Image (cartoon, rainbow, N blue to C red; front, side, top):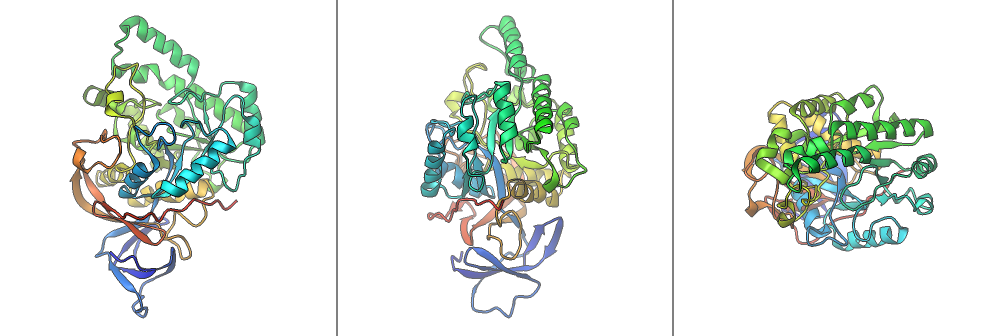
Length: 448
């Protein structure tokens, strides 16, 4: 494929801003120079013929754990960003529970250095809040940091923030989006102790959503939202997993005006508690995958705009780690390579439209985090684009998995719809199973 600094994409079906339409694109440098019905008068450039395939903006995944620094036996920024490109994700925002944790400005700057030298996709890094780093938070540059991440329930990395006075000070004193993991720790610990009393050290995996229960999620989410309303903070609730929590959110406000937003992750839409018997700890996530009733409610809420963003919460572990008994098996799994194919399959199953996928996975993350010139197919925007073969089927197998951990919870599943090619900052970086060996990645910038 051409790597020219100027080329046309012709015969494309664009999915963008609620519409599907046939138009050609002129790419010049790293930007979309022109969008038009007829660019035939522009002849001094190469041509890419999309042959009627769909083109969408590159996905922006606002919640990934790429495990670097500190846990590179599981994954690293290079391996996972390449997998992301194969899945049509051109930009990611990475979480702070690495080693060292991204809870000081020094650690945050070091992560950006790693991103600049190793990432193959556009990158940004959230800053993590703790019970004792308020001064660091107050000194952050809102033009460089995408958001602040708070764990209001413990998960991988032990960054639980449970001091109510600190929480109120953070909520009252930052202009950044506060992204939260909501699970009530007291409720979880009580449920876990009950399971230990019943099962000892061999708790069945299907008790995970009983231990990390609906009530644990609702209590924490409702408290965070109450605090946000009291303080005027800009709150984003990560990975909503229950039907009960949906009553906390609104759908009658444009996203740009919402002070409280929410997202859903691919695994909570694809799997339900009935899958624990087959998948075991391979689908152990925090918050837990819950009932089919919850799953169905999440789809309805996503399509009706109570849920604003689609993300992955990509969080790989080695198979050896995941194959432990319930209590020792870590939560999380790899997802960036397969999230879009899963959504395209859901489109064929009439669970969601292509326009809604693009709204939730491309447009809305850009709006929420004020990401500059990305997330849309617009003249002047960066040329981050994904070419989709909507009808091509492919089966997830170990031989075609790009994650460093080498496994996927989707193994054996056949998706309908695949990523053919990915364009990043005007460069073709992925095409039919192959990643270009030279990075075209850039740091995300924020227009605030």
